[in-house]
Amino acid sequence: MESIITNKWTVKGKYVVITGATSGIGLATAKELAIRGANLGLVARNQTKATEVVNRINTLTGNSTTVDVFLADMASQQSIRQVAAEILARCPKVDVLINNAGALFETRQLTVDGLEMTWAVNHLAPYLLTTLLLDRLKESEQSRVITTASHGHKMAKKGIDFDDLSAEHLYSFPKKFFGGPTFRYAETKLANILFTAELAGRLEGTGVTAHCFDPGLVSTNFNQNNGLLARLTMSVMKIFSRSPEKGAETLIWLADSDEITIHNGSYYTDMQITIPSVPAQNMEAAKRLWEVSKEQIQYSDTINKE
Ligand SMILES: NC(=O)c1ccc[n+]([C@@H]2O[C@H](COP(=O)([O-])OP(=O)(O)OC[C@H]3O[C@@H](n4cnc5c(N)ncnc54)[C@H](OP(=O)(O)O)[C@@H]3O)[C@@H](O)[C@H]2O)c1
Image (cartoon, rainbow, N blue to C red; front, side, top):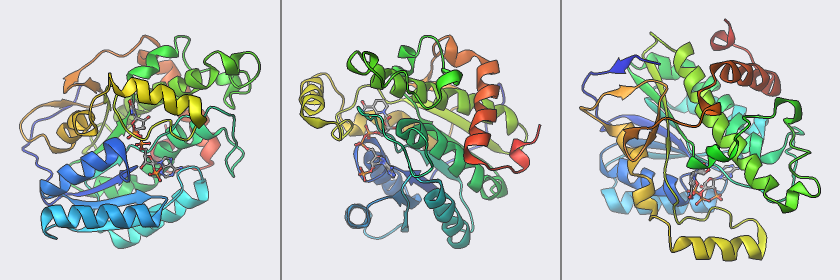
């Protein structure tokens, strides 16, 4: 947790793999990182949207950086495994992995793997993609894994309910009408922070560091998948929201800082280390999360060995 990166670092010329860059915070980040000279691997589920993003970035940079597209649905473990294999085949180096794709689901949905959707997309997908790309990340002299968490993790006051990982309780009556899905989302964002802390500890001395951050309340396409009421609520919340560019600032800073010291395993808000909620500091829960995640992705390599 306490190791510090002090070497000079810039994202210029680095290869950055980023999920969720077809919209919102991820899109703003991808554009700015490309302007700063990063080469990008966009992991997206929609080819048309991804192509539009590539065209926008190429226009911004005058084609001065590489922008690759890798298609994957982060709700499918097979899709994530396939995209990781493609990235490994096409990219001789990965310097930064940004796990940013995320969503909230008002109704309980199961993935093709039989897992609750919010958990699968927001937590297990970053866990699996990171695990699969880790050896390539380790090959760079220094590299970073950055995960988009949220202040919303604070709503999971009791921590992650390990006895109900499929969230049946939160999505059943009456909870589902009284914030259950939002509490579920909060659990996944808490998982992002615990995952980062545990990953950082496991990677001590490898040159790979792990960081996460809260973008604030940001005006994006978030929650647009949840019907009219959710869309109306988001419209009202836009009044209090930041722009995607503002929401992306800390992420860009974490990816590109050339002089600051970045603490391995920490959670950041507005470019400052922030103490997350008490459950988010529970390293026993972080270890437990790691073990259950390993079971849920049915994957094991050296990082998973004690
Ligand atoms: N907005 C906020 O106020 C806020 C606050 C705190 C944290 N966050 C976090 O910020 C991150 C980005 O969200 P955002 O606000 O920028 O929302 P957004 O505009 O909806 O962007 C979400 C991105 O994730 C992608 N995505 C979602 N599900 C996917 C899947 N199954 N497979 C592949 N890609 C998928 C989306 O792809 P498509 O374009 O194809 O839909 C999109 O690129 C999320 O992790 C969210 O939890 C947001």
